[in-house]
Length: 587
Ligand code: SF4
Image 1 (cartoon, protein in one colour):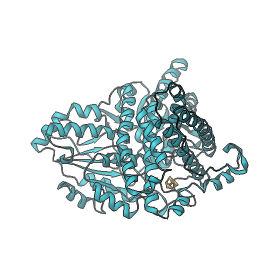
Image 2: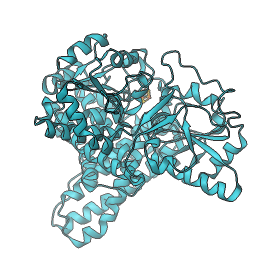
Image 3: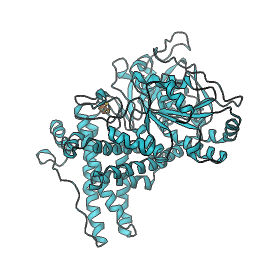
Image 4: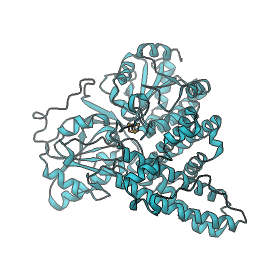
């Protein structure tokens, strides 16, 4: 196997024996094969779209294109870091991809002929599945693993003999994985966007063409990916707004006596559906179950429609990477959504469930009926007293915050923009610091805590994603006497969309271009959603972006130099205080 798609990759180079995340060589191989089939599907999808869509026959058949669009984002999402470790699920997805590919190839040929055009020849070598099998489920896993070697990163590194170019091409795949994650979550609410779907197909398809052998072409498509990601994040923002806009709230971090379910990840729809089913269950059986959030689902408390269900009891724990230490202390059922699952420990494995794109061998997967999760919670001990008997899982690096403040995002921030502008003009705010992204294990990530603590008292921190757990315990107070916190939690990774809107409003009110706004950005990257966000900010010409804690393994030094020269992208230094000094002066 070879995988270097995330920050925890082995020795900063690549996972070759087993993933540091726990991904097995078999799953890595199946994911490579799946992505290869997604590229083929995308090529047919892009070519079919490129034909005129005026023909009524094509309009009728476009249902297939929509079905394939949805498949592509969902299947891509399953390949994110820490999302899915379940080999049979990937075999099934590969089979679905093969079936879609056959149908779409036929649609493309028919459509081309209908338009009097000669169908283009697919730009890849057709490879039969081993032993002449027609479906992956008929093939032995070992044979599939061997088969996938022809399409993995290593084979392309050998063929291209240009690690910088292959790294850029992979970066595009990772950016598409981030975009697909947001699109797949939005699709749960039946929110789709044809422009984004068409771009995903075009970008995957681009990777099969000769044009992808040019570094400049790859960077152009990467910037397009960043721009398209704004639409994807906006779509998810609108989808989540079906719970109403975010509004300010404080979230308790303490046990509440009673039966309990912990929900981790990012999927707000899952937690909303679970809460509704807890209410129905109580109406039928009289049994009450409290629901607690973990990780990025802290943001669920920002939505009044979610927090007022009568079952959302508080928050438990911190960022995703501490789950193996924290889940064992939780005395109830645990439901994992989206891509934050680490290999389960025996202390809680029998109480764990997955949903959506997440999967793990032998862990029950829930589609949309959460009654088995509720019943598991009822069978568990639950919290027995409100405070006294419970020992919170200790974190030697970061003290737990007594409570969290959420909801100062999106519309809330825009409502207060005049007050904030007045504070900027009065000098109460000297600079904004966008510090967010995904958290991870690395010791170097203490940098983000040191950075937040070292900023001057006239700074405002805008944070998002689970990077917030590196600074939420800091008592930074308010902006003057405005009641607006100096540490503003924008929400989840996709809620960086809010800061883009906020910056646009700020620049209009201050009469300057976005480039001249007093904003410094420090991204904490871990996985592919953070890559998509970084591309978005770069594509907007967002100035002064630092990334860390380590340079992505796929971003080779020659490419990093190009990104620095063109987009002023920098890595964090070893000293947070030195970076603060530079950022104060806009460097
Ligand atoms: Fe390694 Fe990250 Fe790939 Fe897992 S996802 S195998 S940790 S690079």
